[in-house]
Length: 416
Image 1 (cartoon, rainbow, N blue to C red):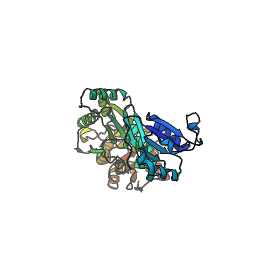
Image 2: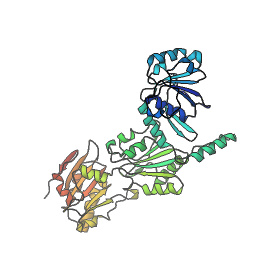
Image 3: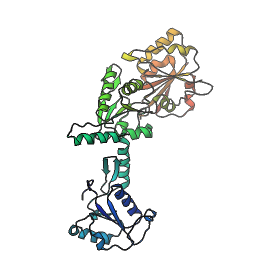
Image 4: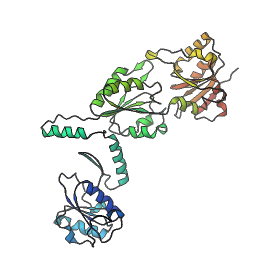
């Protein structure tokens, strides 16, 4: 059995039956501009009530001059008779839900102007075929009619130098690690990618969700080791998009939180590339909640400040430390793990109390997640009890963490 190719010329189709299954087949045939004859002794689906139907029991006389016959009655004895007679009469046969009596399958069809894509599971699961059809439809570029008209005109002129169009870049926030923290929008986007450019903090579970034929490129940046400069990443994104590909830039956490989203989105937009930005669950708040810390706890914190201890070329950023002297907010510091000693030193220099409640929350959203709670003066000791990547949380709200549940392991250092 083979999947019937898309017919280049309209065919004459005979449909036997007027029930629910027949209605689905009738809609597919009508969408293909094929001539359709329907024969049924009785109508059992409202779709056929205003349609032209031969209202009589099927007989072999109805087969005359038809190229394709569809039996949607569910009658297996009729399917067997049609199967045995089809070669002598020269028609192709499809018997609904009876693969052994089919010359071809009906696929779930995506039609976009002159582009037609058919998906089939060999009759195993029409619903799954429809699901895949939906994914394909999501990949197709919008406003594609002009593109199809252009390539058709080129081909008619004998020009075979035709390149794809409609490339797109998706800047995808992939959360702090586990695929469980992906948004539904991110999950859908991942399933449609042809190229994936992946940051270091994207979880393995997330990467495994990419299509098998998706090309994966590691563009991770870790302290002192950048596989590609940001300008090089920008140019790669541009090249793949200009080649007409659907490119995903996979970022840990949320791309809007120290995720270079501006550099990439602004560059691509200036080059005329379509860009879609997809938020992710940030390690900032996922980490706090998983460690039992409420950063905006009423009575202990007036709000939260998100800062980074890391600047370009691995330089230490300490501008925020002095704010801790008289600050009623929770400070959440990203990329602070490697600078624990420098943070303590700077705090002493500017007169910040070493007794401020502090937490390191590491390996967020993984089986190895660890929360270490102590004081600012114990920061170096705390770093030895966990690993990176980690977020640093400083403020009075941390003092209440012991009253909250947490995920993973939690360690409290003795204070005072």
